[in-house]
Length: 242
Image (cartoon, rainbow, N blue to C red; front, side, top):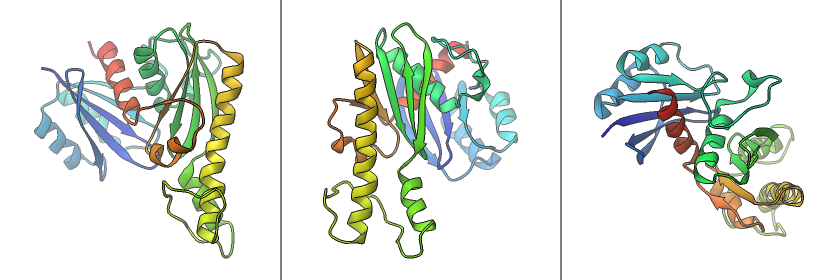
């Protein structure tokens, strides 16, 4: 069975998912993207295909290394997709946003899909039932909001997120957590309601590493899939690495 490595390099973490055929075997967080690290992955998994989604300045040798050992595709605005993108400036669309939209199209076809990705930023990504990625919105993510309160004030601490957040904070830490986490949940619910009012046959998918902190506080019904970007990368690889 063909093995595919799907690399996802975000602003906070570098990760790779290993697929056996269409089955996600495991997801790995990488310490770096240097040649020894990638060479060891290639040795261990013997992949036939690979794909890279990167929103950072990754090691320049990476693409040559993957191209020499596998059928390799770098996700960008020239990638073949199952949906259309805005004609204005397609090159400015983040590779991660293209990947999660591809996954939504594959798993929730013929629906108006809003994909909310919880990473360094929250991205709202809307793809119509007709297969058009229309854009969405971007706002600060959880770590960015918590870090900003600490960095831009004299006395507020840097607070670690937790799942169980009180509505009424009873000390500095819980006041920050209530304001940030419940505030994010209200923001997300507000956006979902606005989209629901405008579109029928509507579906919401939540993805990203901060799902555990936010999902329980949403009033709207959602599908949560932390592996959505990997599944999208695999689907894109199958089209572009033939």
